[in-house]
Amino acid sequence: MPKRTKEQQILALLKQSSSILICLPQHPSTDAIASGLGLLAVVEKMAKKGKVVSADFQLPANHSFLPKSHEIFDDLTSLRKFIISIDISKTSIEEMSYNIEGDKAKIYVAPKDGMFTENDVHTEMGDYAFDLAITVDGHDLENLGRIYEQNVDFFYHTPIINIDHSPENTHFGQVNMINVTATSTSEIIFELVQDWGHDILDEYIATNLLTGMISKTKSFQSGSVTPRSLAIASHLISQGARREEIVKHLYQSKQVSTLKLWGRALSKLQADIEHKIVWSILTQEDFTQTQTKEKDLPDVIDELIINTPEARNVFMLYTDFGTEIKGLISTAPYLNALELFADLNPQGTDHFVRFTQKNRSLKELEEIILNRLRQAVRGR
Image (tube, rainbow, N blue to C red; front, top):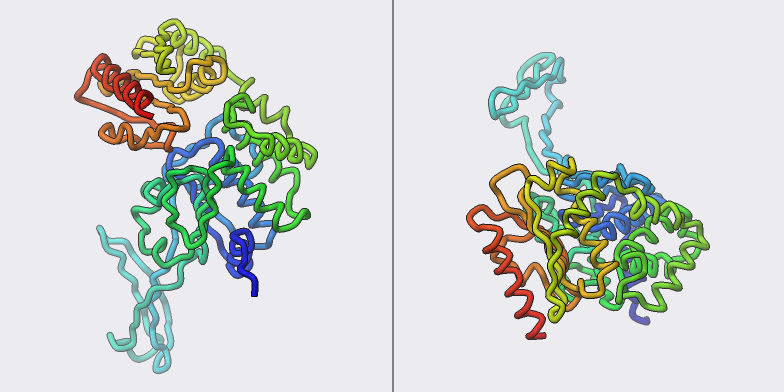
């Protein structure tokens, strides 16, 4: 019997499962969000139950146009039920109730006649609510944050399909669909859907997947674009993907306040052309004067990458209504930001991280990041 391909292995796991958990990294990229939602639509089209989770997730305002965008949950609840069984062969139940007292839940069972004893009570753990987990755009389980940290046993006992395009992926799944030549995770999911049958792809799935691809390739202006990715994008559009709507929401829906913040960031822009580093430092006054918040900053970095050839490595430092100093760092594909700045306790992906520091000045952090990026670029 010929060996099954990974595409066939994943399809077989989906078919034999009834309830599927789709896990996005903490602080997911647009690609992760869009590909996760696209996969949810695929799962539901196969008449399976699905749920998308991402630790502490908040949907970006300009992502609300995505099909099923409000079906991403920020926590994993009711994962496994604790079952209390009572033997009623000798006496039936007249009434049941419960009460929360401090940190204890008390369950009251009144027998119809006779009485219950300790021997009549049995406890057990029920089955997990999901019989398959799919991780999207995360190179290890720790990327899931508390979704993984609080449910380690679930991920240990449940089959995992690991879908990613990062070369740093640790291949932690039972089936690992890792394609480092793909521009995005959305592109990999498209290839899966095509392998499974042409009747799966529809307007809603196509719109999600094209959104992921457009975001990851900076609207097909980045150096990662391939002839294959352009062909896929064309096919998605032919299948109903709403390209104009995607571009409008991702790139043409900026408020005046956000544009003002961009202006302040650009006015303070500095560059190291030799090492392809561009950076800017903002203060609390910049946010106050423009009536913006830190959530508006990632778009600034995207614009710099798209419109500045020198911007392979971009970082921004800022103070935002507090004593802490925060930062965003976007690195070129050949640098791993999580490893390069591990001492700053970063969160994010291999090439885009955010961090918070309390005991260092803006100037000190600027020097640390600059020197480390210069060293890494020279050493590659």
